[in-house]
Image 1 (cartoon, rainbow, N blue to C red):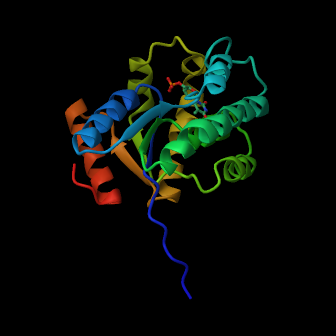
Image 2 (cartoon, protein in one colour; image 1 turned 180 degrees about the vertical axis):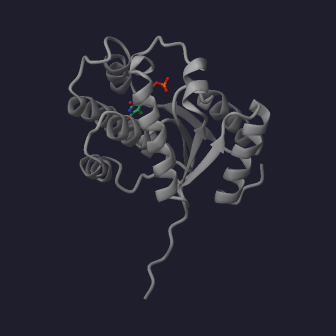
Amino acid sequence: MSTPVRPPLKFVTFEGGEGGGKSTQLRLLAEALRKAGETVVTTREPGGAAGAEEIRRLLVEGEPGRWPADAEALLHFAARAEHLAKVIRPALDEGKWVLCDRFADSTLAYQGYGQAQDLGWLQQLRSQIVGKTEPGLTLILDLPVDIGLGRAAEHQRYERMGRAFHERLHAGFLAIAKEEPERCKLIDATLPIEKVAAAVRAAVAKRFRVQL
Ligand code: TMP
């Protein structure tokens, strides 16, 4: 007997390297969904809940080498555990859409591909912490590293980790997109904002069978 296919959770994550315009695209998608009568919660990682925002400060401020990479990965998952428990799962349980600026794929890309943490270990943590609350759709806003770093301000810790690091995580996001083509959609973030927004809406409409 075949197991019944669960519909994808109305949980959409925006991923990619620096400078891809994730926050703008998240806001535009939220507006489009609200116009269509949907209830939407917008949030971000690391952060999105009180304690997780405190952890965010520990991660995005200070010297690039301030944490051993395994401690850094665990801090991201600690923040994520609280965010899931206090914000994401309750909102999904109430039937709301959740749009999140970065999620667990960023840990795979940044701490795994970028900072050389074991991918199997990170996947194990992911399945323990995230469990069944995997995004229904992940939009990976893709653009060449040079353009992304040119757009980023180099104020925060990860933006100062060097070009080779950013090349590795870029390759990581492409690998993730290839491994999970149903959940992940690569979007060309070099296009003008409105074209990217249209591609985002089309991906959401197709995956969730909504009209946007
Ligand atoms: P952002 O919200 O401006 O993108 O900044 C968050 C930074 O944190 C970004 O540079 C990517 C990084 N990050 C990780 O390294 N691992 C993670 O799991 C997450 C969620 C973010």
